[in-house]
Image 1 (tube, rainbow, N blue to C red):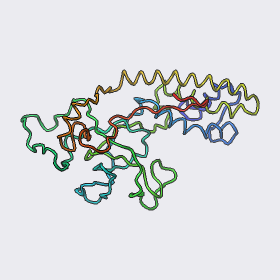
Image 2: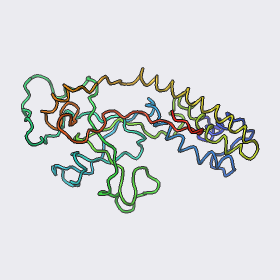
Image 3: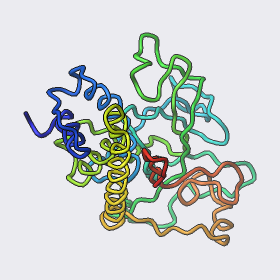
Image 4: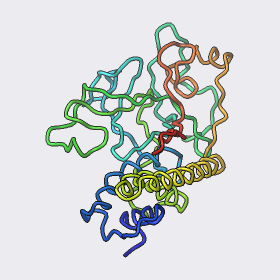
Length: 299
């Protein structure tokens, strides 16, 4: 059997808890298979959210649902205040990491009584794409739920993340033609790095240890569960350290004088926020989720 199959990952988890039997197929229907299958997808998704894994990083354009300015045809205009644009939440997105500020298509709406930014650049010869090669400047965004734009009729609403018959998960921002950098759902084990796989094996083992051992030796199940929880913590510490070393760290510090300086700008500001202009701030960078472990601890 290929090593790059979910069944093999589940068998590694069974090995880790000392279970003597081997799964032929995680969907095979045995008691061990059913327990492993119920936990597998949830463990995979939660672990992806727990660190900014490099292999799962994806950047893609977002699908526009609404433009509060009314300047975009064929989309709605109802957007929760004080945001301008509303986008679909990608169906394979586990966590939004950032939305880069789009310098080529800046929003031109200016709050009333604010300073107007000159439309003609004060500096010439900067080229058509001055941001190329520069570090990412993130814009503010908020993940929300909106019931104004349910998915089209006939859509699969029970099996697709972020959609329901009533409404859907959305991303609110002031970036026109936005793209998002996010952690994507990577289902195939052959795309994972070795650290993630080892962490998932331990995480899955910690979740299935007690239900699998409960009929034979509950105390042993509790013991191996706690052992695997400790392994998960160690792997996540290493993963988060690697993210700091390999990722794109942000040294932006919100200080009062910068908020005031930005307050006289247009919607774009520096990063597209409202600092000094009032309104809901939102987030620049998506952080890691805390991971709820089988013994009740969070990490």
